[in-house]
Image (cartoon, rainbow, N blue to C red; front, side, top):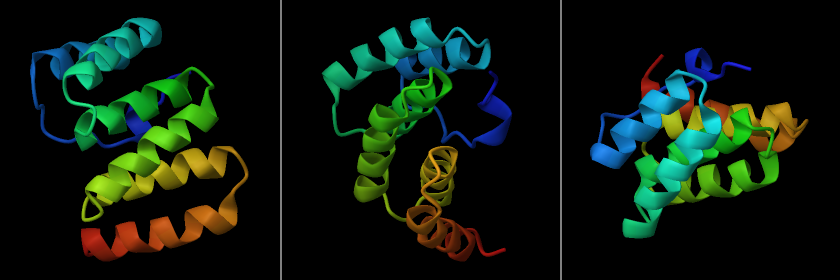
Length: 113
């Protein structure tokens, strides 16, 4: 299942992030998860790391854990439209439309479209 095309990624923030993102784009999700978790070990509050970890977990079908990571990314950086919309997409995949709708609305507001 390729999710890369449906999500937006922030600018790279480090070597481990770059490695994990490349693995994700190649659909090597277990490799991506291992690498991004190493990055989170160094900086557990980095919203870009949490975002990529959440997307990787979602690609692996681990939606509950994905939701937690994406929610934390949004809490840390609420002004990021991509974080808002990606979190909403994971919620929608779980059938949580009511929780996803405000996030989608906020993403549109932030994106200006």
